[in-house]
Image (cartoon, rainbow, N blue to C red; front, side):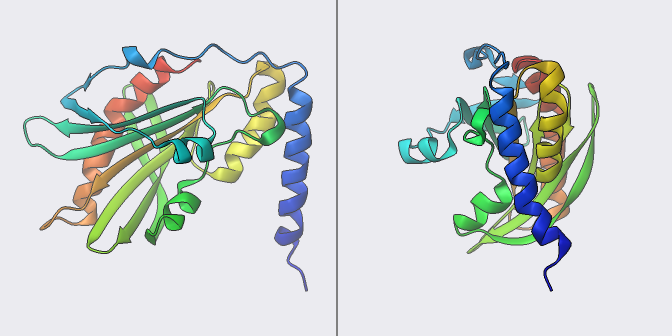
Length: 214
């Protein structure tokens, strides 16, 4: 017997596609943010380098703006990676964030655990995903969330729901995928890597909120 959830998923996706296509008739996408003004220093974190995104990956993601940078905690030297994919519009459903729960396993990473974590930032408390993955000898903690002009959203399905709820009144469908990666170093555990990623994300969130259209 087919599960009700299995039936509802394609129905929901079809409804979302039709809705976003309809939204395109009155949508007013915001201007692109100027990422050259994004701070090279975030609290005690210093940007150490930019990581170019290859053309094939950029085309696959379909984002209008990408940011991929490493930051180091001063003076301790802990390293985190910040990846942001910003979509100016999701009209027609063709330009939407790719879930790390799909992209990372497709790149060879093996999921170990997935859950939610609360972060207390100067702009308020937010709830984000915590994803622990491994590949070979490498093990990392990934915190990620979807950020719209109105809210931070952890769940992929919740992001689709709020897209349909917010678009009619805001006349826009822009969104960002924000992903922070922290490595589990030798002699450390997942909890330590989570603390590093959480600290950076708490310092980061208010700046991302200011940088991208709201």
